[in-house]
Amino acid sequence: MFDDIAGRYDLMNRVMTLGQDQKWRRFVVARSGNPENGTTLDLASGTGDIADLMEQTYPGAKVLGADFSLNMLAEAKRRFTGRNINWLACDANTLPFASDTFDAVTFGYLLRNVDDALVVLREVHRVLKPGGKVVCLDTTPPEKNLLYPFVRLYFRFGIPVLGKMIADDEAAYAYLTGSTMDFYSATDLAELFTLAGFQDVQFKKFMFGTIGVHWGAK
Image (cartoon, rainbow, N blue to C red; front, side, top):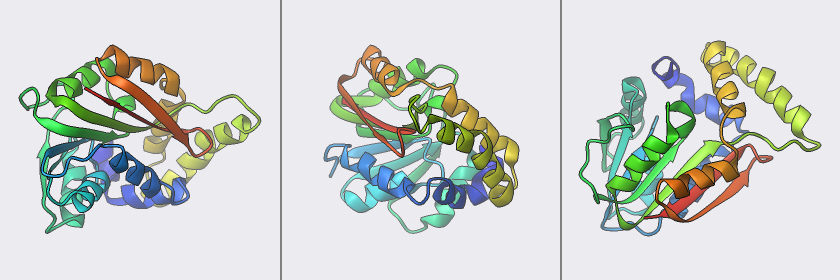
């Protein structure tokens, strides 16, 4: 599915988030500690936005961008040709790195697309150095308040229609919205980070409570 939408992924992100997605990615990078002269890993790197922001913010760091989708990686390489970023295809369930390797691990929209988020978080914990930071950007189910009916309507109908118009793939974006509504709440996801071994776990919500950024330390 992600291979099929790689070419229009960035445009679709800008449109369906009303241009806010880059602000959230900058927040992710700001919460990653200071990995200057260290090594960072961006999992589910997609078309490379977080990895690129990391490379720009910390030019002395060794930056790796990894994804399961080969077409996403090809798009990332095309977009950021000449950047000091190493791109790698890998599975987040079984990371091909030694324990205690990275100063920071970031990921956007990874956990709602894996079979077992706890397995992935434990792998991330394993490859982080002691004191290393993890930062996660993902969707979170909206709270049931006055805005809930409108947000739910946008998720159920608006985003799939945009997906059909822009990415020519209504089914993919229907899946993406469905996976958001069925995902962990921000509080439950924070507890999962703690269960995986992370300390000082915190989170902040954006966009009417539909986006959450979680961070913690090993």
